[in-house]
Length: 214
Length: 70
Image (tube, rainbow over all chains, first blue to last red):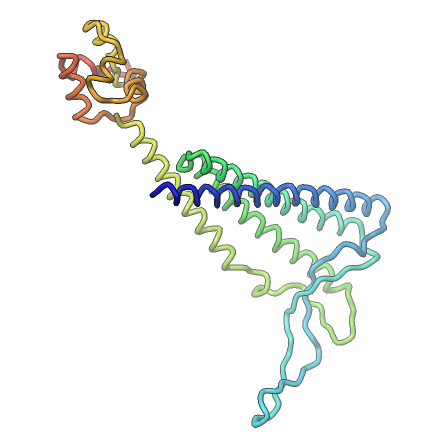
């Protein structure tokens, strides 16, 4: 690798480091604000219309589908759609439960960003291929899986809770749908990251062994 | 550690400094220091040959096996 390529790589690492550091502080700041609002909501039972919750629904009526001028118009239905609702009256227990999920998810995201920052910092100093970074990668993958689990659980609890309580003309609120709940692509990405982390760990061990061969 | 490095003993016997050995063998001071402290994971035959040649000794004079169980 020539020197100009190295300088370019270093610039990219510095740029990414800046982005992730800013992202970390922005998320930490917004999480603090969100926590303050959450506590206010729980204490005073106001501002609940600022909070949003996922709901699942299907349309009762069929719609017209204009395929083309030559063909007959078809019909369509909308099933298991997802939306966001907010209300001015919500029970505190539900707000607390949902808040707990959101807090857990955001803490996991913050911790993941912190790990990425550590990896980038080590890359900047040229000490990238080390076992510590492999462990950090593994943590990012595990946290990603935890985030996915809490996110789905949060959606499931919200949709289930509101399905029996919401009423709207032409809409049928559903408890949950397996296909809209499962995110297999995200799941595979994090599982693949776990594999990468393990390969990284083996590579780092080999490098360490090579470095200590006199 | 089961393998003990007696490099400092041999250096003392030959009245040679680590810096001189480093220069004559062609190994960096940091690598020799790793070897001397017993932190090395492996030693190349070429390195061992060069050290033995400079110190006029046998590999057994530098490396020693100690059974941890005993």
